[in-house]
Amino acid sequence: MKQNRKLIASMGAGLIGALCAGLFLFSYAQSASNARAEAIEQFDGELQQVLVAREQIDVGTVLTSHLFEQQLWPQIYLPEGAIAAQDYERIEGHRTSAVILAGEVATKARIFDQALPLDRLAEGMTAVTLSTDNVHALGGELVRGMHLSLMAAVPNGRVEELAHSIEVLSANTSAVQMGRENAAASDDVSDGRTTLIGGSASSGTNRMQSGNESITWVTLAIPDAQVEQVLTAARAGAIHLVLPAAAFTADDTELDE
Image: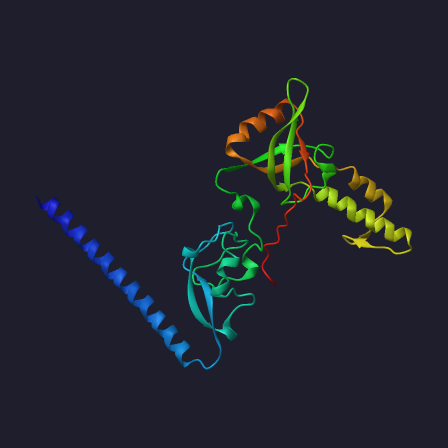
């Protein structure tokens, strides 16, 4: 009995201690909030409504409204690139490129300037990465946002369309782009102008080396119901990516500088 009473007394003391600590923290937070409100009321300069992190937001987090609260801040104390509260829609769905601490004003420097393609994947769609090459992928001229048709050979030897209006989410087109830049630089050299790329003059040798690199993969948004069919066709043989006329859409959802 005595042990039970001691246990109950200990638990009661612990609960009281926790309650007191909670009340202290709440009182401290209220005091800080009141002090901030008084400072803003006495401030003579221009104020701006900005987004402030409610809690620490780790790198790579997709931004949603519940992560922020709106606060009035004196404009002279705002960090460079602070995001105004009315501009929240321009960063919604983007990911953080660095940690945003609790109570910190959100800035452009800590947020990717574009929503990642995979984060914009519509309901009912699956992101699928396929092996490919320049011959089967428009000579490597793929651009994110293109809408393609997928063609593949069927058992009777004919080629049929597997799916249409398939969006390109990403592709390893950087090597192809580098080849174009080096080719342009080579033309400048032949005209008597030397263009520096990456700190050194480009040459015909560099152009040839980059030009030999090939596109090897592409990530597409495939309707859920067609994923198995597309993967089966890809395993059986090469899938051709076909671009119908007027099937290109640009993706330029960038924050203004």
